Structures are given as C-alpha cells and as structure tokens.
Length: 371
Image (tube, rainbow, N blue to C red; front, top):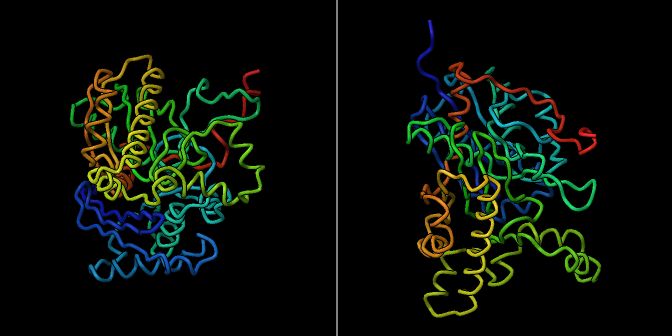
C-alpha cells in the first residue's frame, strides 16, 4: 500500500535567523523565523560553532508546537559549502555531512542545515535530504571561461529559491520547467540573476566571489586593476577587503545602511546621494538581466522578480523602465526556501524524482578535459 501523506521538517539556517517549517505534503502546517541577536552570535569564534545554538532553537520550536520528531517522515536542510554538483534533491551522506561540517569551501550558516538535518535524522532514524544547495552548477562551458587560463567562473547562487520559483511559474502556466526559458532575479541582501534554459541554470552572476550588480551589502563587480591596487595599498587586510566585497560593500558602503526601507525614506526626503546610489544598483541589475537575455539568445518566456526587495515599488517601477521590452515581467516577491526544501524531498518520497548521490567531485574540473 502506498503512503498518501508525508510529514517533512524543513530547516533553513541563515546569517541571522533560523527558519523552521513542518509540511504535510504540499501543505505548510507551521513555519517560524527565529531571529538571533548579534550579541548571541558574536560569542562564537566560527560559524560552525553555532550548531548547538541552532539545534536548541529548532528543538524549542518543535516543543512549543507539540511536534514529535518520531512522527515525521523526513528532514530536509538547506545546504552549502559543498563541491559543485548537479541540481536536484540529495540524500545526505557522510561525505556531504563532512564537507558541510568543516565549511572548508564557503563559510556560511546555510551549511549547518545539512549538519542539523542529518544529526536529527540519525537520532530519530529518519532520512535526511538537501535540495538544490547554493553549490548547484549547471553553467554552459562558455559561461565558465575567463581571460586568465586556470581561473574559471563558478555558479554560487540562490539555487534553492531560483529553482522553486521556476517550478512554481511553470506549474501556474501548466507547462514543464524543462520546456521554458526564464530569467529569474532573486533580489535581496544578495542578488542572483540567472538564465534558466530548459531546466538548467546555464549562466548567472557569482554572488559569493563578487560578480554582478552591487547589492544592499555586497560590492558586486569591481574593475580588476583598481581592486588589485586596493589590495596592495596597505589600507585593508585580506579579511577586511573580502568583507568589503562580501558583506560591507554596496549600499552599506555608500550610505551606511543595508536597510532598503531607510534608503527609500532618504529618497523621499530628497537625499540626492541616496537616489543616485539606489538608481545605480537598479541600473546594474538591469545590465545583468540584459546579459542573461543574450545568454538565452534573446529567447525568454518571462523575467521573474523574486526575493525580499522585489516587494519594493521604487525598484520594480524603475527596473521596468529598462527591461519591460525584453520579455514579460512577473512579480513573485519573497522567498520559498522552506517550501522548496519540503517539495524537493516530497518528490523523492513519492518516487517522482530520484535522489542524487553527492560524490564530492566537481561538476567542472577545467578546460583540460576538453583537450
């Protein structure tokens, strides 16, 4: 007899929050976003040391909602700090757990999603999964090549929400994701703008390594020679410069805030500098969309705006001025990461999709394999 109902716990650790949700098939029974105070997180020397705090947060939430982990069918955790891999749902194995635990590749709390899901799953004898982690890399070969042999572009993006938005859009229009060409713009603290070509994200800006538009707190693309000069200027340590690129740049560096509501208030109060900086970010987003449009050979069904800042009327209105003639512009604001974790896991539990196996081998090793 086939099981009709599956209960899935989804875990999504972010930079300053832990999101938890319980799903019965497609139905969300509850979800909570627990915000961690900065003082609470500063006590930990490294991000991986936050595991006990995050675990306690999850267990407290489950207890408050009278949820017994013995009654669920699977646990799904957001991932990260993995070698590049194909898109899909992965059953968390020991190698994936090891890579996420050490955070050798990228240090980000999202990797704790894998660690917590597997440890809770093992404790209660439940399978644990990871769905479309940020390390999903489906680039076409042309998108990887740079002008310096041996240096290649990699895909580090909001793969989880990017894929979920694409699947939802396709479902709304009663077509398959694999039959569409889409440009999806996840616009939040980080901004990823990807070209989806028949089910594959063939190109996108690298949100980890400083590529694409500037964001509320990331620098985006910087001309190479001035950046090299800055690195050797003695003004910054390596860590300080990387922080300027990855978390203290962009709007934050210019206006001393990454809160876009405050930036909008500045603009309403006739702050000319704030308007110029915000308009520059919008312009850079439009340029990246144009690049992805070319990547799709100008064949695009829709440009979809998602992420938290897609709720911002100022951004949407002014971005439309640049892109509205390229393709239909669709608003799907916010993010659906907990839902994506649950739905990817559900497809595996229902045998609609086969779980992938993480091997730790990069999707792309270098141009040498083509010689």
